[in-house]
Length: 212
Figure (cartoon, rainbow, N blue to C red):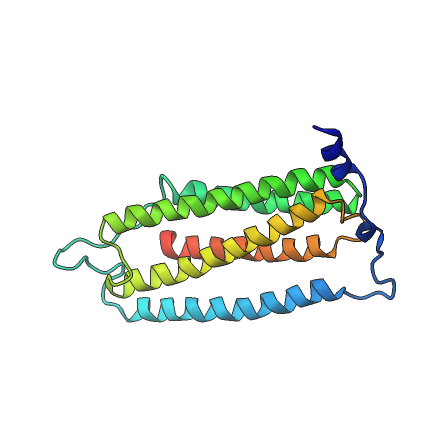
């Protein structure tokens, strides 16, 4: 580690000296994120409702492949199962970063958020590879209601994961610049809430699409 890098990880910028609102209550960044997540819950609830409505009205689920007597089948291994584990672990590392900055441990914040970013990117790559495998097996957006609902649900979730990775990368950059401390880290808390939400949605999707 160079002297310059060490300085970034051990010295505060003026921003880090800003204190939380001492009047009590919840901060504006965290409140804004909670309200945003609430709207996203309603969005995904609509997608889940559409999926279960289509599934309930289907004679066979998963439906038969076009021109065959074989049902579509989603494999948990070798990609989706490990990817799910990685995303759950990333939620833990993200929370470890939050706990670290609450203790004013900026090095712990940088380490854990960095790992979370890497895990998020790996998850997206594994999802892309899984899409490639499904496409080669004939599961596409125009593969009837099954293909459409599958790619719609997982695609929107993947977009949210990408947005979460970008947010975490910004938090990591600001952490390296020394902009967070135990007195000033609302952005870290707000981003962690979003990342936990993304994780919970994927667990629900995984259970719905691959297990139920």
